[in-house]
Length: 157
Ligand SMILES: [Zn+2]
Image 1 (cartoon, helix red, strand yellow):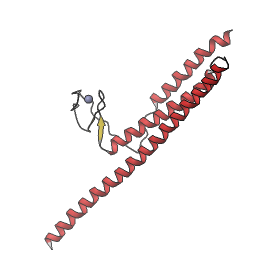
Image 2 (cartoon, helix red, strand yellow):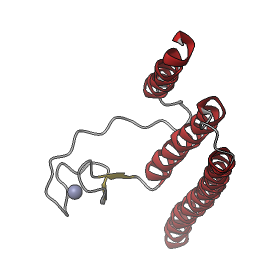
Image 3 (cartoon, rainbow, N blue to C red):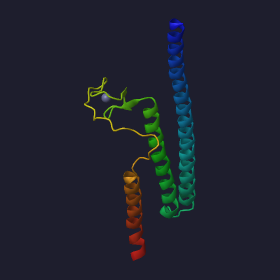
Image 4 (cartoon, protein in one colour):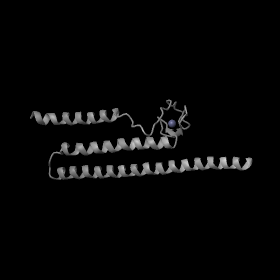
């Protein structure tokens, strides 16, 4: 009986590990699917910008930044979401990326095995916790500022 118990425990451990891997894999695929959708959306936005610019140039008009900037903001937004999803994928796979060359490394690695760059100690990545939004807000603000700066000369005329 002892032996059967041991076998049973080992089997259930293996089963748990396999199950966890399967869950992680399906989660990873789900996130990758979302990334693909976002990338498709970005391509659509690029076409949208291109079409607007083309029509304006063709009609000899000044390119209307007011029409273009909101689309650019949508693209930035998508890219923001993509980098979050990519971070989640790394967390699921329990790896991190080298800050220098982007190689995938063990989460606890102190140096990159590819380029030798010293790695920062990993923060605990909590999948349920949103990443801080500071960078995103800073980017939006800088886009808005450049919009204002470009509009001001027109207003002054
Ligand atoms: Zn590296």
